[in-house]
Length: 431
Image (cartoon, rainbow, N blue to C red):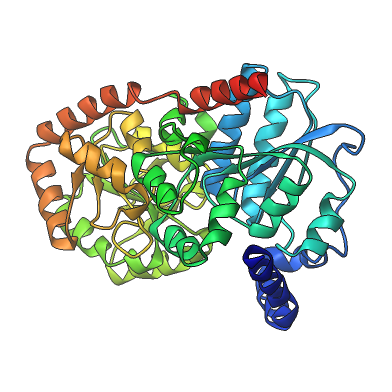
């Protein structure tokens, strides 16, 4: 009874707050484009007709999670665990675009693969019914995090198998659903299996009273995302022979202050490559570089050209993980502000030393593990970053040795997506 009351209140908020929700949707270019669809009033034409056959639905909220989702699909196709047409949804347009680009590549090897993509509608039952009413969803795979109660309860009421893939349960999510009591417990108990990254994620679900049999600690799928070891010529930037490179990966606009330390610590034979987390912030980075009385070039305009600029701004999405192979050391963005850090594993794949800032909440357990084994370097502030970089310039051997050991250790941690599919297949055979 209490669960029903909370759910009715939650759904009623969509009606009461509809003017505010409309303003928020119209304020963003991508959600403005899908405005009617998100309210269940319109739906773009499907690339394939999946109405008469069961569909496997995959949802990822961000670009990074979409990359994990694609790797999960590739693994499933390789293991012949996916036989249905695919429905993919996100709430980010560039995630949808990236998925379409990559799934088309997969179709060259899997000619029978059919797919459909769209924005996820609002978590309001009439919107979901309009979107899903004619579809026969057999399995729903939620990648990492994006828990929408109406969606989960709607799928459960229609006997859809629901799986959390590479799950990440933040303290914020845990606190919210702990506050909601039995409502949060019923939400997570609606999943057929919760595959989580770490013991910390599992313990937070235990706090909510979730059945332990539903939870499987499977490891972080980021370890499975090994970029290809070689870039095509069209995706390269040529530097002078004696030039060294530092990459500041996924840097946010409120982390621009670290450019002062990086620029002052590194000699002229170091080139500073910056990959902004958001491409639309590129002008802010350009202005900052000008304030440093330095020069820059754009990655997109200088492929296959010998670059002698002090800074290189990477203004293309989807290439950062591969570009790490060109650097001598990497600094991970999102770790010097409140974001909680981004993927520090990608540079290690190429045996590159990694430095992270003090705030790596999103990878808290992994960072503690790697630090305890002395496989990465974490600095407490901007000044300590400067000290580490000065020491690297003076003698890089310690950090290089650290990166090799980290690479070897990562090889032991791969395979979480294979393990996930194995457990799903075994569960299906037993049911």
